[in-house]
Each structure stands twice: as structure tokens, then as C-alpha cells.
Length: 354
Image (cartoon, rainbow, N blue to C red; front, side, top):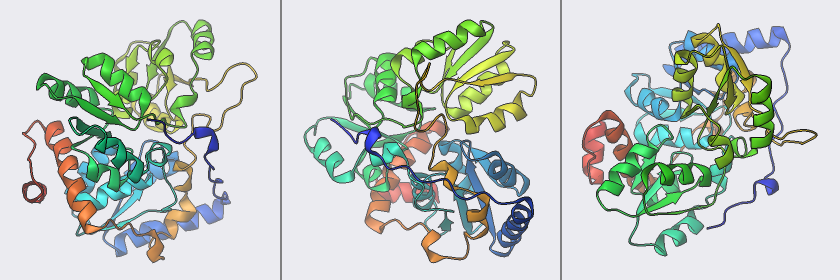
């Protein structure tokens, strides 16, 4: 199934930068409003370092999308401020329907989400009624509502291996590279949507090989949303959390990292003695669009955070029927990752998550 051509996507302009005085004022205002609103900041590893630092310093969370979902559900705050992209805010709202969920910009989307329109995806599912529908977390609430399972990159292989062992055939969406990686690791019978991440799709094997030749003592860490020939060069393939752990545990003095460069903030904290190198996104005289940085993550700027409580437009809403159906597939993800049996109906999901 063909998806949106990444070259046709209109990328957002980065928000204006603030001078030091304005940054200090914005930061102070946001911290004050967090306390006043009984709110907590939940940020993804790909956001700017100053946003990640702010989350850590105010008792929030910096994590991958799976841990963001867990943290937001379990935290006692009545308002969640999600610094990430829209599907993360929607997931937070589905799992915490009684909480107010705010985002600095509701325009912060994801190329994988955009590549998988719900109506086209529904038709794809209708054409394969005998398959278990497994979707990556980087999808809209409406796509999750049509799925049997949601997975993150940290558990995708394990979930599909579990389903394959039960004899189930898989319909996978939306990332074609991650889908191929999962199929190769599990041997599952899979049909796949043809989406891709605008960041990871740009990493290039030839340029990476040249970089490795320049740094033969470097380990190569690759997110599985990357192209097949890039993944083949990796010493470690994994989710953001798994790559951070590998950075710490591997003996190599330096690491070449094929994922969004926002991850460097946590890697430097976890392994300050390591030399971190971003993997190339083109090659000699090549150009890139994302250049190892998600342009939508950049919308989570400090100035926008300072104003997040001021406008109703920053609040995330998910229709009740969509939320109810998406909750089933999300609960299966959380149940599987926690090592307990997934529940099978919406009522049980709501009980399990409360």
C-alpha cells in the first residue's frame, strides 16, 4: 500500500529564537504555571535539550513514547503537558481521559502519522480481513482505533513474534522499514503499509560506511525506522531507550547514532565520556530535508511552552468512540510490555487501566 510521498510534505518553519532574558522569563513563567495548574511536563527524547532539562528539573519525565504513556497515566497531576508530537498527546488523553492534556503546538505532527490517513487505512484493513492489525505508536487515534494491537519500536518484534507463534497473519502499518525489520526478525506472514519517517528515511549507507572508515573504533547504533542497508551496518538496532542503554554499555569510545539528534542530550548525561557522532543523512554534496532533526519536534519550543496554558486550542481532545476503540489496542501494548495477559474488551480495558 503506497503512502504519502515524503518529498511532498510541507515542513513547518522553526519557531523564533528567544534572547537570554526572554528565555529566562518564559522558563520562569512555565514553571510557575505548572505549579498553579497541578501539571507535569512529559517530554520525548527528540525534543530540544532545554525542554528535556526542564522536564527533569520539574519532576516530569523524558522518555520514549511507551514510557511517556505509562508515566502520564500513573502521575497524580490533573494536567499533562506533552512535549512531543500529536499522536503522543492523543495517546496520553486516551489513557488518561479524566486529565487535561495540553501540547505547546497541536500542529506538531509526524510524517508517519501523515502517511497513514484513517480512511485509506480502513480500506486497507477491509481488504485483508483475515489479518491481525498491528500498528506502530506513531499513528493517529483513529488508526489505533482500527487496530488490534499498538506497538512501540521497543516491543514490536516481541509482539509480532508472539502473534506469529499463535499462527496469526499480520497487517502492519505504517513504517515500511520497521515493518521489514520485524518481518525479518520474526518470520511472520506480514502485509505492510508503505510509510516512512522523514528523519530516519534519510540516513544513507554509503555515507555511513565512509564515516565508519574514518572512525573504525566507533559502534553504530541504529533505530529500526532506518533503511535496510543502514540497519545492516548496526552494532545495535533498537528503540530510543535501547540505544541510550547501548551507548552506556558498549565498550566503544565513540558511537555513531542513526536517529534524531535530540537523543544526544540523554546519551551525554548517561555516558559523558563517549564521543557522539550523528549518522550522515545524505553523503557527498547531498542535501537533506530533516537532517536528523524532526521539524515537528522543534515546535515544542520554550516560548510555546510558556503559553501552553493560555489557549483552549492547545488542549487535546479525542472523540469518545475513537478513544474507546483505541484503548483496547493500547492496553494490549501496555499489558504485554508489563508481562501480563492482554485484556480483550473495552470494558475490561477501562478496568485494567483505572
